Amino acid sequence: MTKYIIKGGKPLNGEIEISGAKNAAVAIIPAALLATGSCRIENIPQISDVTMLLNILKELGGDIRTIDRHTMEINCDKITSCRADSDNMRRIRASYYLIGAMLGRFGRAEVAMPGGCNFGGVRPIDQHIKGFTAMGANVEVRNGMVIASTENGQLHGANIYLDVVSVGATINLMLAAALAKGRTIIENAAREPHIVDLANFLNSMGADIRGAGTNVIKISGVSSLAGGTYSIIPDQIEAGTYLAAVAGAGGEVLIKNVIPKHLNCITVKLEEMGADVEELDDAVLIRREKPIRAANIKTLPYPGFPTDMQPQTTAVLTMAKGTSVVTEGVWDNRYKYVDEFLKMGARIQVDGRLAVIEGVSGLTGAKLKACDLRAGAAMVIAGLMASGTTEIECVHYIERGYEDIIGKLRAVGADIVSITSPDEPEDEVREAV
Ligand code: EPU
Image (cartoon, rainbow, N blue to C red; front, side, top):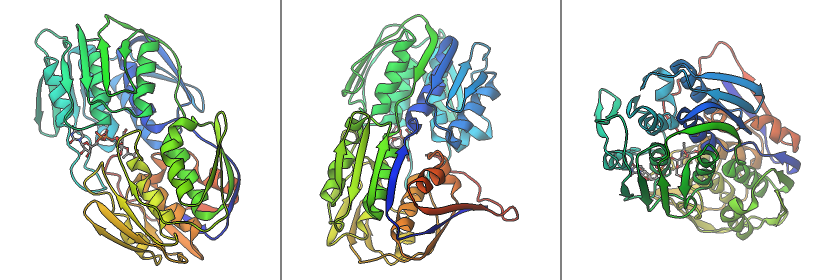
């Protein structure tokens, strides 16, 4: 069992370098299955979700070469199986991108459903299935597997209107459509930066995808994709998490290797909460000296305030002057972590998608248990803001999506260490992000 021990109450000062985007990497790695030849992918974050996905490709027969810490060469030429049902598949949400990639390459996919989710509610895939079906696939869900097939081994283009703005469905349908016969139009598509990154990656291999970043994406199927070299964008949410950490703990930190435009939806709120933010070319400087102010936040698909920043921002608001209202506009329920904050003296009431946070003058350290990736990151922020010692268990959730969080926070003066005791077993990772 690994725990983080944080001695809070210290401001953060210095520089933090942001890694490649998790949610882009987990889409781009399966996309390599569509290429003939090797894809050299740079700026891959060293996180456990990526390791699991690379292992899945290896299990299928993919050839993966490590060039350096953040660069891999992936060659899927020898993969012939369109069945993926290993345990690793059930551990990460993004493993379902293999449905789109396999359908695109083989016209058939048999893929294990990803595991249940830990931040409340079901995570349906009806919009993915609706899109594949419109493209000519017959899709069934049987014995925990999604089985999708086509009559003549190839999908055809289709007009698809998504009933909800879904990142996962937009990505899966782009993967499926890249090699389909004819033109696919995805309407009401998600616009997140990682959607644009996937489109750029596929286009760099010879795909014909237009409109990514708007809500209408047009994909003209091509006959083949060739490998190449591509560098993943910086992680918007990792950067947002460190910005929130500084807004919460105070201090002055230069967040380097970011695309400032992707952070606007986060920085405007942090400014409202009392932080000063300066945008540079590929960095953002954040300073927080004044008291934290209350703010109302509603999470929405991009360019709205990201749901993946909701727990971290709630952590900051626990010590704001005044009362804040947070509305979760993407997931039915993403407040499971709130009970942990109450142990630290926070005052929060949750009612469905709403959380009302009455700011307190201080948090006190406590023993906490991370319950998902972003909730875990929020607990780290609360620990940095609190007086005394905070102990966080189940940190494997955090390590699914944050590369070297301990090293990066220690470099800016945080008193945080990771301790592993070999005798205690880690809680099994079952849910997916
Ligand atoms: N939805 C449906 N039907 C579908 C698909 C989605 O009703 O077929 C609903 C969901 O229930 C949810 C909303 O649509 O209410 C948005 O879901 P979306 O499909 O956009 O989420 P996702 O693709 O499963 C990705 C990220 C999440 C992030 C969401 C929203 C990855 C691997 N995961 O999930 O990231 O919260 O988009 O932005 O990209 C995280 O990184 O911590 C994380 C959870």
